[in-house]
Structure formats: structure tokens, C-alpha cells
Image 1 (cartoon, rainbow, N blue to C red):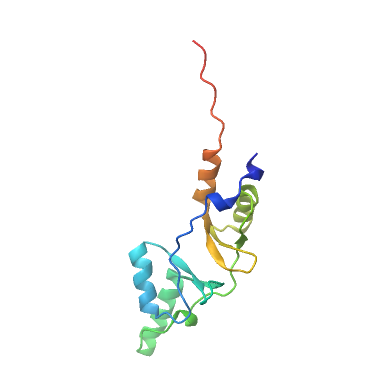
Image 2 (cartoon, rainbow, N blue to C red):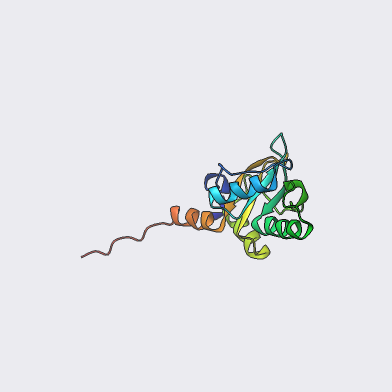
Length: 140
């Protein structure tokens, strides 16, 4: 049964995103405002081109302090090798991919690599819980 449940109905769609041109300190503000540890980086057409994390920001800020200039852009720090998952994937396949890779969340992309959303471990658990068949009440 779980093989027929797709991530499409359980993923988060309203994501905070960054662009390559975004100033690094503006990204830090975005992460702090939204209470998130990273963000997908997209181009003007919504194609996923990378990810940027708190770790990436801290590393760049440290380098900047040693060089006497804190700043730069997201393009300077983003990771371009990103593991993704396709829209229309079953929750079983998604769970297998997360367990195998050790990832806590995966960006969801369409067939043209446009960012559609993100699926997390807790989203998958929510999906399992939503479709659990309730036990029958014991007869008295």
C-alpha cells in the first residue's frame, strides 16, 4: 500500500530559496528569520543549481574575517552537487533513498530539474501515519 503513496502530497512546497547573486549576509538574515539551516539555490527559471547551508555561511565568514572583509555572494559558497528526488516518487523509494544516503531531507525536482519542494524524514513519517489502518475497537 505505501508504495502507491507519493511524496507529492506530503512535501513542503513553500520553501525559502536563494539565488547565486544574493549577498551572503542577506542569506544569513533569511536563514535566521525562517529558522532554517540551509536553502536551495535556484536560477531565474526556478531550476535547482545548488544548496547553501549555515556551515557554508560560517566558513565564508571566518575566511572573510581573516582577510579583513566579510561578505561575498551565495555563488561563492554554494554546493552544486546536490542529491535530489523526482516529483512522483513513492514514499517507500524516498525513505530508502534517505536511509541509504543518510540525508534528512531532499529537494524535490520535476523532469526539467525545476525545484518543486522538499521532502523530509518527518514528512515521510507523517505520510505513513496518515495512511495507517486503525485497529478495530475490541468488543465488550
